[in-house]
Amino acid sequence: MTGPAAAAHHDPGLAPLLLTGFEPFAGDGHNPSWPAAQEAARRLRDRGVRAVAVRLPCSFAGSTEALERALAEHQPGTVIACGLAGGRTRVAVERVAVNLQDARIPDNSGAQPAGQAVDDAGPAAYFSTLPVKRIVAALRDAEIPAELSLSAGSFVCNHLFYELMARADTGSVRTAGFIHVPWDENAPRRTVPVGAHGDDRACPEPWPTVPGAQLAEALVIAALEAARPASDLDVPDGPLY
Ligand code: PCA
Image (cartoon, rainbow, N blue to C red):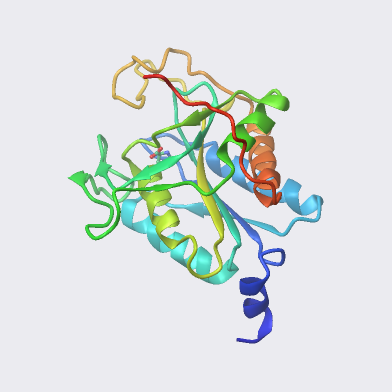
């Protein structure tokens, strides 16, 4: 191979970073993951990092197609995908993508899989290849509320995370993972919140929020940590139950 694409493939230092965010879903007019991804890419470019942001449709099939187009167009070395987890109080660095689609609400194309695999022939799960513990530690150092998370759910974000990890280590992508963000200051006002479980167990009213500027900075920090050659932190962590 010759030309820029070949150079990007062989030298991860030259390959851009891809950040993705999602369009609104569940009838909301806003999804903070997209402005955060866009603003983070802008801030990274200001620091001399080659970064691009792409907005994905909140659709099982459509998100995979848009991801494939973005991977082909940008040939990224690192991909950090981002989505909204309304009701969470912290930026959640996801560790595991599971081979499961179980959608409590239809996606934006009307698809509502019930207990289906993302890929019938694929492994049960993939792990993020981001330095997840180092990212959480760096976020906390920056006083951004952050946590490790063992589940990205079973809706479109988990699907996209799984499809992303299935493509990591092939083509240009060397490092990839997923980060869920809480609502920002533009959270909708709802009398009945539509939270992770369809009731208000996990989502007190008003919604827990983190300023959008901090969500963008969280993605900048995650990107800079992902670009450092250091290995992940060797410290025990994780929930007890
Ligand atoms: N959050 C949803 C889908 C899109 C988004 O931003 C999820 O967590 O699956």
